[in-house]
Length: 547
Image (cartoon, rainbow, N blue to C red; front, side, top):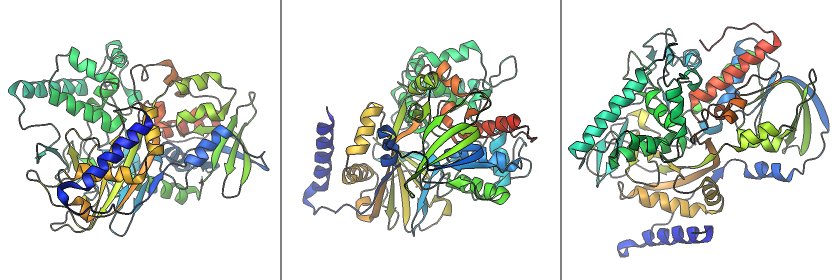
């Protein structure tokens, strides 16, 4: 099916759902079609930029104000170093952790939770302590967390066969043999979780750079998660659905394509604990992870003042001979001019797919960046006048998943309010495009009208909530064509990824892409690591946040 046939098919499906049972059609709610700055990003290919009209010197430049870039700035500022600038293509910081808000609630445009940080994630714990969310010693085995950020119960539920159940592992109609496989899978993941090598390293740690390098574990990166399950004798359709859902949720890619190392890492890396919450509890807020973005920005500004320049497109990086500064050209669309920065130390915290378009004279880096594959992603926020009618079964939860659905389900922005009689609310619905190639998914995001996306989302959510269409007062959609790196077999252990993990003389990379997948903990680790390496190069004394 080509792109035109695809659009025709989804349009026809939408029209059919609007006219069922002879009832009058309900008009689609208003809303916006949002996304990354496509026009500016695509201008990189045209490269029709004016020569620099001004040159400035910047000791340290951080490109990208997502979690990695902000974490780098946070660490520099925490260490008393102020001579840095963060530049960002978009009009605001946050990357995949941006958020929106309206009169009803704040809501996420991307990442919406943070698991209880592991003991290895020392920089995450340090940040949470600074923000007052982790209370007491950040290195305690079981810290205490601010109750306002601990996800209220019930945390998750699954819609299947016309009713809701607690948890995400399918239960109704599951045979004894399949339940036995559930148990075996759980025990195997627990074995991986507690396993350590001869050097005391966990088999699957978070951050992933601290994981064991045992050959038998690294070999898992050579096959897909689905194939690994089959080699272990796991053929339960419901177990495969659950594992596939987990891979789609974290990696935007199904288990048939995700590396087994990455797939197992999802289940085995998280072992955070809290004195006042269970180990499966996550930290969340109405705006998703945007509170972490705001916290790092406040911390930087309080220590060293404003260091963020938004609406700035870096389009050319020219590394120079040893001892010479790096020339970085950026276009400022609001001023319609080009600025050149002469940089002593460069931290690249933007996605790696931009490297071939920006870095001059770096064929090895270009080839390494082109070996990455990126998953497209769509997020919709539905503002509702009240909570919709519900099917029977488990009570409304924070995370609500539809078995076999095209979407990944939805989270409830107002869940933390724990209202007994909920009024207006916002549902944040996520969709991966693992049923098509990444390029095809990007084309669909680019070419599909908002109305078709809105119709698809409402039609799916009408299954558990028959009146959701009548209650939706606004439906906004955010598109991200390169939302996250896909950890395909060979990426984690491959030479291409390792090139970006090197500490260069003047250049280092600090995006979650360096880890091979998009998690807050990975982006923050890469940012802090790049900042600490930069401080060492500059001869600045500091206290490490990385253990």
